[in-house]
Each structure stands twice: as C-alpha cells, then as structure tokens.
Image (cartoon, rainbow, N blue to C red; front, side, top):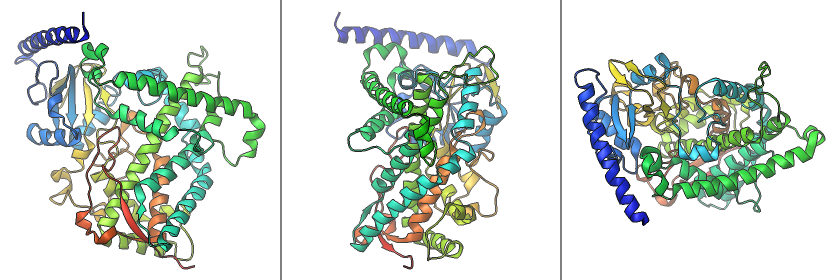
Length: 508
C-alpha cells in the first residue's frame, strides 16, 4: 500500500471518528454540563484552520467574541484559551494544582527524554524534586550574583563595540549585537565557556527553537503522527542527536578538568554544579534514592536552560529597545534617571539597578505589550473540574494568552495599545506572578524559576546601552515608521532586525 493511499485511508477514518465523537459528545452533554463557548470545530483539524501565522492574535480576536474563557479544538485536543487576568487567576492560582500538568509533546520526548527536564516533566513527585533541586543549585540568588563578573565583562565588550560604531558614524544591528552578547553570557554561565567558530552551536539552537515553537500536527492529530507530514519528527530527531552529542562533549570536558581546574575559575558554571552531583540523589532525604542524577537529567536540564535563556532574553531586550527608540520622550526620561543615579563619569554597575525605578516601569510596559512567551508554556488539566461554571474535562490543554491580557481595555483603559511606562507608577505590580495583570514569567507552581537570572541580565544591558549612548533611527526614519511586526515561535521576537544609530554620551 502506497503512503498516499495510507494517508487517504487514515484521513477518512479520522473523519468518521471525528463526526462520531462530535455527535456523541454533543448528545451526551446536552443540557448536562456547560462547557466554555467557542467556535464550532471541523472534523480532524478542529479549529486549527483558524490559528494562522500569528496564533496569539487570532485567539485574541476570537476571545473578543466568545469571552475570556474560551473553548477550541486543536485537532483532537480540547483546549481552553484564557484571556483575562481574572480568568488566569482561576486557572493558575485558585485551581493551580489541577492545572499544573504539562501536555506530552513530540519535541520534548526527544529533546528532554520525555519527563527528565524541568519545563515539561509531569506534575508529581519527580517534578517537585527536580524543581527544588534546580532552584537550590542553579538559579538561587547567590548563584545569580556569582555571575556578575561575567555580565560586567561581556556587557562592557558590547559597549566598546557600539562605541567604535558610533565613532565611525555607523548604524548598529541591535538585534544581532544583543543576541551575540546574550549567547556569550549564557554560554559562559551554563557551559563555562563561550562558543567559538569551530562549534556550529547557534544554528543548532535556532533549529531547536524553531521546531519547538511550531504547531506540530502530530501533537494535535495523533493518528497522523506516523506520516510526519510536516517533517518535524525527522528534524527534531536529527537536532536532538546533535545537541545531545554536543552536551556529552561538554560534560566530558568538565569531568576531565576535575576539581583543580574548577578552583581556578572565578565562578562555578551550571555544568560544574551538575557534574559534581552526578550519581547522587536529587533529594538527599530520599532513602530509596528513586531520583538519581544521571547524564540524561543533566542534558535535559541543559536543554531547558538554553531554550529559556538564549532566545527569550534577547527577544525581551529587543522589544524594549524598539519601544525606546520609537518613544524619544521615554528614552530621555530613562537617561535622566541614569544621569541622576549613576552620573556621566562611569558606567552602570549592577548595584545601581535597584535604584532605577523608571527602568523597571519601562520593562514592565514592554512585557505587557510584548510578552516573550505569549501563551506561556501550555498547562494540562489533571482531572475533571468546573471553573467559573464551566466544565473542563481531564487532559484539556490550557493556553494563557498573555498577549491578549496585555491589551485588555477593561484592565488597561482605552490607551492599552500605547507604550506608557507611567501606568506602572505607584502600584505594586511585579514580575513574580502575584498580580495577574502582568505575568510574563507565569504564575503558581509552574512559574519560571529562572526569572531573576533573566531580569538581571536584561536590566543591565538596557541600562548600559541608554546610559552610554543616544539612539536615533537610521536614514531619517520617523518613530512611527519602525516595523514592529512579530514572528511567532517558541518565543515572539521581531520579524525583522532592529537597526539604530548611536552617539556616545558619557564624559571621558
């Protein structure tokens, strides 16, 4: 039987099953259980045809019609789309334990050995253990502080590079420059080294991010998975193999270097920490030693850390820089704060960051309009439950549309589409997931444990670039002419690079 014939038979079979499921489901639950409103699904694909190239925007417009708790079918997967702070609080706080699950995705099965990492491990004893271990050993406040010399050195190199461009009257590709400095900082923090030209690491990471961010038909229509119609399974297998081989080399190097080499370094990188704990229990109190740290644990966590730091931090900085060069008034206000706190005779130090309240407001406003992960990481219900009068069945996927929440006129008033950092003045909204109007790092049990590491790097780079330089758009471009098109993936970066022309502004 040819592959095309097999595909046709599978589609016909799926169509019959879908019609049968819809008919039975509608009759069984008619006038019995109230489910969230939403658009009518088609056989097999459900509402996938309505998603488009920018799913966060498509679902935002659907939610304007159907409400902040909306039901859609992504293939065969029942999905609840949450689009308001009040609804998000119900799912991520009030009923947090029920919605702390993660869906099984094809990419995670290969990249992180299924449940071995932090991000996509199933909610339960193993996740609680690895999450605690991760927070204690890798992203604690003291660990983040220990990397300050790395950040200082690499950001100083960034400033020097931009200064040379300014002296030559050149335009700077800020997207490329920021991406490069983030790659070097996080490579040194995670691996203990920066990537050289002999290691083709960046294209590999870009491939992993592209695959992970794709709407994989195999995840939503499982009976089509053997056909791999999008070719994603082949790509993720190849990328996963290359990535794990690279990580094995890094682990081997750290094991061979030994304790003496570690003592010579000014800081302990993440792989140093993880290798030192190889073959030990994740939980020292676990008498049965059910979770022993092995190479698969280490490599899975390394995948999580790379995915959560390389692209996302770059994207967050990129959008903030874009808004600042589009709004000279806000840029001037930030520079006035920097001059008042730091002065023009030296560069910004990390100890200055906590005093930069306007910078903090700017970053909050940037996250509101440009959340790095517009859907966060998808959640999954672990049992049947009723939320706000709506029945949510077990194994439902939960998508929290933070992009839509940031544009909710009921929350942010009629100027919700405008970039106004002052809206965060004299309020207690923070990044920690306590106020559901702004949750760029998630909330509840599944909130991002590496938040502080990312924020510290982000604050320092933005502060340094606007303290050391004035910026204007190239070739006489007006602020309202700057392209702000988005590109959907695992994160939500600019579709096109940001270019701007710097002028050095410090004394001496």
